[in-house]
Amino acid sequence: MEKKAINFLAICLAVLLLFHGVDKIVNGVGNIVNMLNKMDVPYAQYVAYAVYVGEVFAPLLIIFNHYLRIALILIAINMVVAIVLAHGTSIMTLNDHGAWSIETPMLYLVVAITLFFLNTPPKLK
Image 1 (cartoon, rainbow, N blue to C red):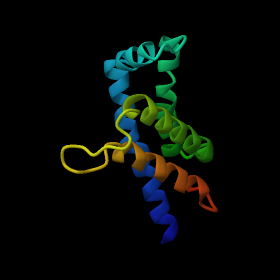
Image 2: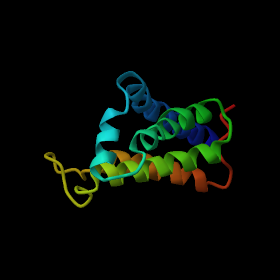
Image 3: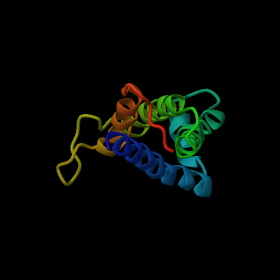
């Protein structure tokens, strides 16, 4: 029973994050490039494409049950970068509804780290 819960959590993480990746595929990474350019990050155009690794490639690895720990590390790194870039100035703030401003990306981060540190990585078969 415990394994089924872990598998369910891993699949939910992958599918929910994949929606963000599909949005980037459809609409591009222009907003990310603009954020990186404002921060004077060199090669911003190329760095922005790394989002596809964390939001498309890694979730697909989880869904297809390959290299799960690597995929979870990629998701965690992606979330840390997203928090710093997109929410860097609002980390210690609340939104209009009283919730933590970074609760969604933080939830993705915590779930990825939790799944990574489980004694057995999820086997989705």
